[in-house]
Amino acid sequence: MSSNASGTPKDKDKSKEKKTDRDLDLANSVRGVWLVKVPKYISDRWEKAAANTEVGKLRIKKVNGAKPEVNFTLSDTVCAPLSGLSEMDKMELIRNSSTYQEIPKEHKFRVSSIAAQTLGVFSHTLGDPENSVVDKLSVEGKVVQRAECCPNNSSLYAAIKKEALTKAGEPKRMVKQLDKHVTTSFKPVANHATNLAHERQKKAEGKKMRDDKDKVQEILFALYEKHQYYNIKDLATETRQPMAYLKQILKEVCNYSVKPPHRNMWELKPEYRHYKPEGEDDEEMKKKKARNESSSDSD
Image 1 (cartoon, rainbow, N blue to C red):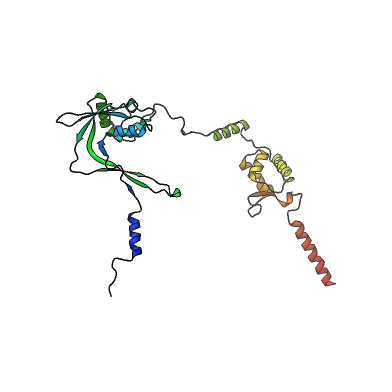
Image 2: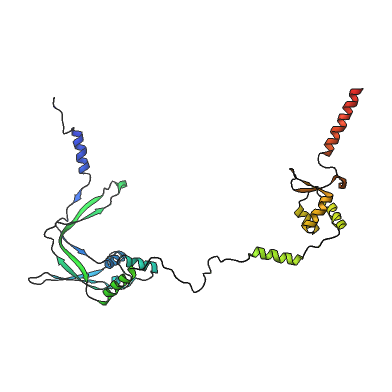
């Protein structure tokens, strides 16, 4: 039994579809085109030029027994210097072998033959998959002549080359000395406005003087008639006494709480209170109830 090494007919159809999934338009394959190399500064200006505008004119002069003389003249709009560019953009153009200055208007083609080569120009037009339009490949022509666009000797071309040589070696980032400080940035401050305001307030209030001990105690007792617990900062604000002096008086008439829920707070000692502390009524009720229960058991 022999095997079919070439594959099934379906495989052949699939391979044929893969090879012929895109057509090539050969309508302009017989058209002759020129392959011309132009300087970078010209190609940049052509890219920036508006669509459907004249960028230059080509003059061909035939000479008997010699190669034709080809001269190319750029339009005035293309040759004009570029405006509205920053220093960074200008430097970028120079680094890319281009320029923002006015470029030479007159150029000459150096024509050479391509007898040993076969070159062509192709174009690719994108399709629209939504409308079932596929990409299109076309042959725009066959290269019949090669040329190089060279500027005529002029002062403009010399200035472009001089600029390229002098600017190419400059670093992208440079250190620049400022004549005056930049006002938009933050500056170091010896003393902030909040600190100055606090100092002015302290001077306006003056230095706190010690009052008589009995007078301070009267103020404290009056405060504790309103609230049971106080923070020492609040007491210092209300009594207007130095902190160290106030602590001495508080140790005599108050207890300092170190347990929650009134941690770091001051409360009057029991002998100075005119109220019962929280939970004291509950303790009295418990003791009274216990005494009643013991008396009933004895009966």
